Length: 63
Image (cartoon, rainbow, N blue to C red; front, top):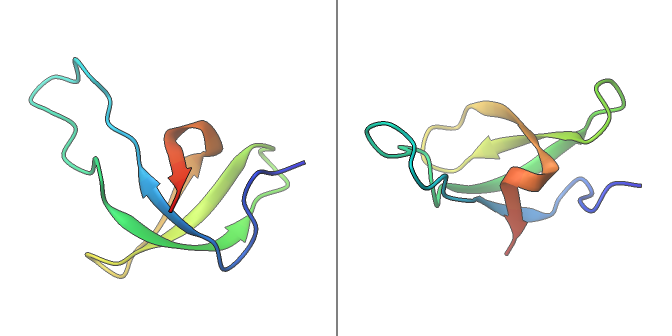
């Protein structure tokens, strides 16, 4: 079962050691879809850009 549900707020976790720095670390947004395929992915609408972005759940944290 997903740790997120539609409407939850989330923040992108940092990826230490990412070449050039992980540019989208700490971006915030709202979960707009919980994917069934692939399992474990959600779609977040980023506040900064308004774009829908897919992430594995383990790369996000609830806020």
